[in-house]
Length: 348
Image (cartoon, rainbow, N blue to C red; front, side):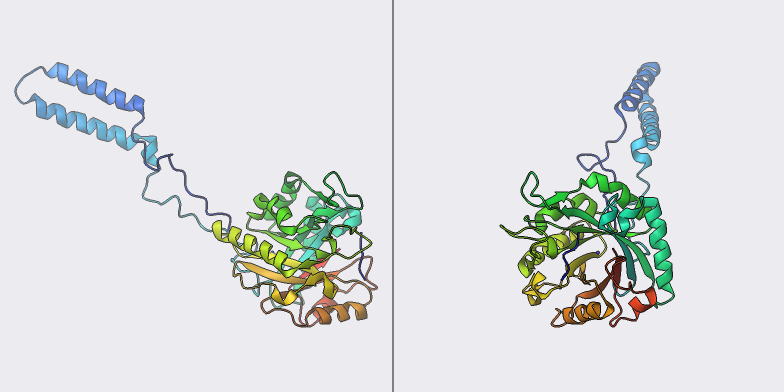
């Protein structure tokens, strides 16, 4: 039993508050008016001057209007018609177009996994090297990823009594931005303690609006009143998972984002109650079941096969390799010889 220590928004173009052009700046309009007045005075009241004045003033206004910086951007191109953002590697659908290999952990905390064993630039290099080892065994493109533990289960209750420590989104921003630049997918992993998954997910909405950022729920660390980490394995019911998936799917639709990964961690049957009721129907999401057990090859395969029984349709399978707890750790070839071949592999 394991008790160890998933299109950028199509931003609207620049618009004025009332949605209309402002026309000529006031100073230029004043200049045109003065020129017209001076011409009227110079021409006097002679016969035929009115037509000449009108033509001249109209021409001057037209020239000024053409030079207006407000109109310079109105070149017939709809500024709202920006190209929709895509996933790293292109496209807007996660599976079956690609597979993923990820480093798992928390920045600057080596004890929590491989991701925290180096800085972000070195982490990018490390996962790209790992992905290269997998590509020769895959018919589909293999995509590098980070799975970042974003809220960390704690032994002490903490100031709010929730037994979880929430990392400031701005602390994670450099990792998320560096991942985008390197075309690395990011999954934010939640260990919510005694609070609920949806409350924690909403705290990271700004990061989840990024097209390359998905979400993971880790029920092992979802404990109830009177429970503490390390004594009980946590659990969550399907209803709470569905609240998160409804919210996340709506976020994707509202901001016209590409499909997002929603990872569900599990290694015991009890970790996800009423699993048959998990809603995997949202086209905006690719729900992935992450077989999170460690140990011998035999024990890992037993967990892998058991978790697939009565799995709701539409859920993709994922696998985890442990550098220290597995004996031995599967090689990339051995990992991809697992049936069915996992769509997401992480390294802790």
